[in-house]
Image 1 (tube, rainbow, N blue to C red):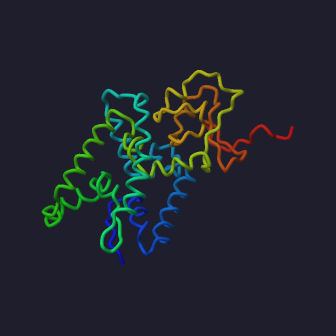
Image 2: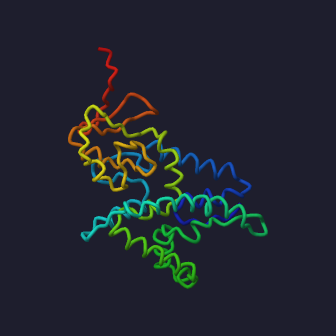
Image 3: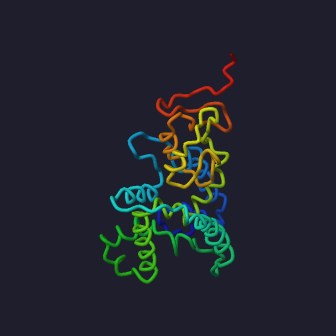
Length: 259
């Protein structure tokens, strides 16, 4: 059995499994997890009304940091940075583990090992606080990833979800399925008054009226809440006719009512 570093990242599992003799197992787990998350609106399996709609703990952590009362900045002018996570997905998750291998033919999970701060937050820091031998073994790699974590923490206070927007390869992978997601966005053009409130309130810098199922949309529902005419709604099922109203969250049958 191969030893896989556990740092709380599903991307590491996929990356490490690429060259493993148990490729179907690792890739199968990763693929199943991707489908489960995506079918439940890109990392949000249930849109709960109590303010805890996220399954990704690091995404939720960034949400909490962004609630700290201080001046906030828009990321609209930084949109080119959103493509960085796709570069990271291709290079650090797929290419490097295949091209850079050890004597046993195994590649490292480069993203998890060298860039992802989630393992430091959820693994290295808690373990080092209670275990002196682990604390003594921490070296330059830990220091580097701690710097990455601190940077992400600071940026999360002033920018909305910077890690998700710019660095997360798992988010990039999920984004590829956004247009075929079980939960999609629907804009009723007959009700839309082009007020622009949905675009202004979107924390992911998406104009839902132009691209309802944009790859950056995380289905947070803020555009649904902001719409004064209930023109923006959730739609369930793959291209199906079911939708959800803004307030009741009960299924609504679309135009073909058979009148």
